[in-house]
Image 1 (cartoon, rainbow, N blue to C red):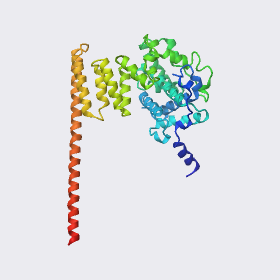
Image 2 (tube, rainbow, N blue to C red):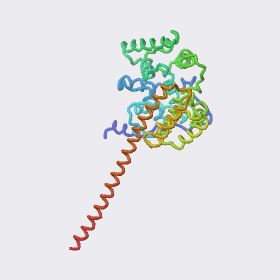
Image 3 (cartoon, rainbow, N blue to C red):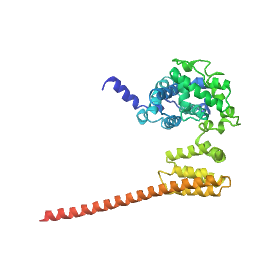
Length: 368
């Protein structure tokens, strides 16, 4: 093994947690790095440059959801070796963070805040109604696009901005452009008024759509909450934030925390009786692990929609049609699994019987 291969092997067995230092009581009190971005600029720049470079050079199909999943997985498994991360984007981001963390370690809590901040920025692109809103924007901002692509992006961006009534001044702010340099994120004025800090503030839905909503109400603030805070927030506000409820429940399902899902469902249902979107989300959460249970939740969805006075008859008909198809498919799948198990069981019994006969015949042969 040559030195380069050996170094790569050693690096792949390292985890990001090995470069993190213990939290202090003061650090644990920090809820967000917003307005203190400059202090964490070297880590933020590595993450965002990795994302832009991956999109531009390796995969033009990567979506914002892919990036969100990658960042969440990195945060959740920061104690795992680099070799644990199989997806190219995740591996690229993780490797990019090794050097800055080695030179200037963060605490564990600070590391999660850095990831949460990028997730926040991604959410602030969601109003663009593009599955690649963030990845295209950061690629544009960091100067990766060729002139032709850059102009095309600007035209599309301005067209959509005009459509929803964003002012020319806001468009200029949103389309800020800096030349790529090694110290791109080290400019003192970059995070001052008019820089990224001002940009993020101007991007909020409250400015674009005129809605009186605070960061804690939005998904951006939701990312910064602890698990208990998310649980309580959704119990109180879930009907207004169905997508957050879905993300929360599906996230628990991915981690197979079904007891917590059931606890949330019970308390939510007690507080918001027959909220049919939650029944459907529950069914979706159990699609792979328990199809029969999933069907029961879809049946509750159908019943709740039929009894709803808010939904028009046409919508109820469409829901029933969809639920019937879905239930039929799940029943078919569940039946196939039962039949497969039955066949496997018969094969196993047959094998055991054949084994016994073979043993008996062998014994008789030995006696002859």
